[in-house]
Length: 120
Image (tube, rainbow, N blue to C red; front, side):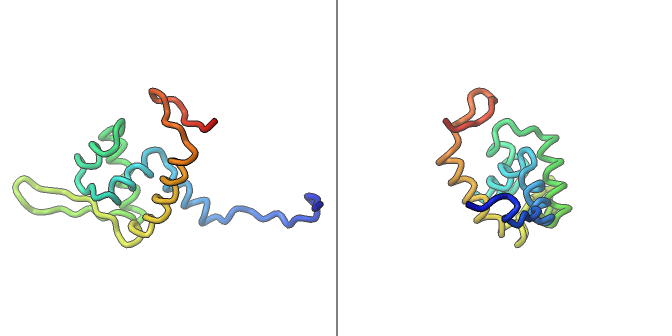
């Protein structure tokens, strides 16, 4: 049996850590999931993600735009219409979100009234 001294211990890749921190921020995964399912307008996303506040959605969309995952598209109409679209970089998260969703379906029980999800 290998001992801890026999195993080369590697550190977590900084890029991986940044990616997990970005996608793992509260509500970000749910927002990305809603957008991958076709939600493009602010109100569409709010309705697709129960419990998400306007303030937090606005904050997360700005973060996702700053990282190049989402584009904010302003349509000069009356009234002005704004859409949020996933960039190529954002669409590349589809397999990640799909895999995480499948894992959650298998291993996570639905939380009760805002409680923590767990699998027994």
